[in-house]
Length: 170
Image (cartoon, rainbow, N blue to C red; front, side):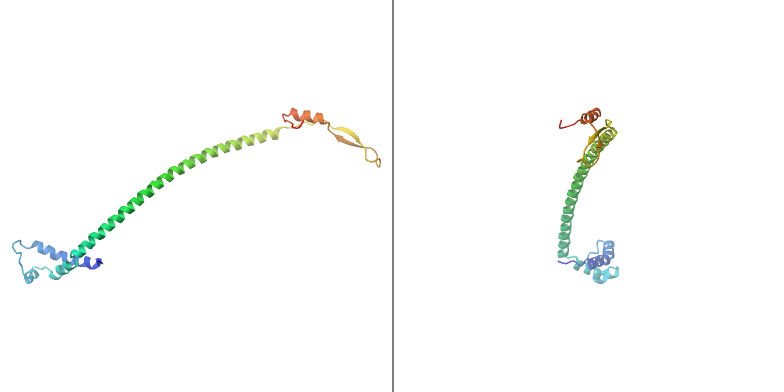
């Protein structure tokens, strides 16, 4: 059944004063004629229109609609509760992720700092190379003998070891 809410509202608003007048009538005047009711200012047409619109079918339809609305509200409340629980879990997970991220950030900041220090240490190390020795080098007898400056391997190895650098392949 389709309910015309606007018509029902208007009928109720028009019937309200008539009902108030009826309630003010003396109790012993149960059987008043329509004319007598009109003489008391009771709007019989408004009462009849309201009575017509608020029959059992209308009341049942309104109750059914109310029940559907309550069920809808209950479902939405459950959905809202589920959403709230999910949001709560996500917040907990977010805080845990933030905490882990901060721990990792601190760890990697330490690694970067240690690495930077190590790089600085390595850059500070200097190798004091031995003096080069002059070596005679001959090129096919076309030119005069030429000299080439070179390091003695053993002296270079000793200089590298003196700075603390390990040498592989010896």
